[in-house]
Length: 106
Image: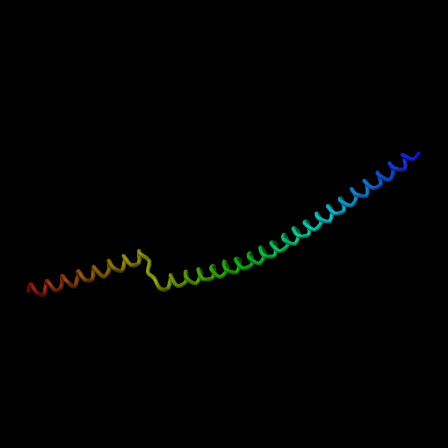
């Protein structure tokens, strides 16, 4: 009869010690999960901010490119147009040269 009472006290103490360590371990895991959750939320917010900034930069680049396309068509000559115009000028110079040679020959 006396030994059962001792066993009950020992078992109660062991259960109490296990419960204390489980509670402590649970608190430790909760703290770690809260920190991880906070880190994930911060990372998501930063990512959303970065995405918004990059989207704005891409839109600005697209606008700049469209403006440049318009400027190129107004300010520069295509190669085919340049060659055609140069050919016409050369024909005119050839005619002038022929006229000058005819005048000199007479």
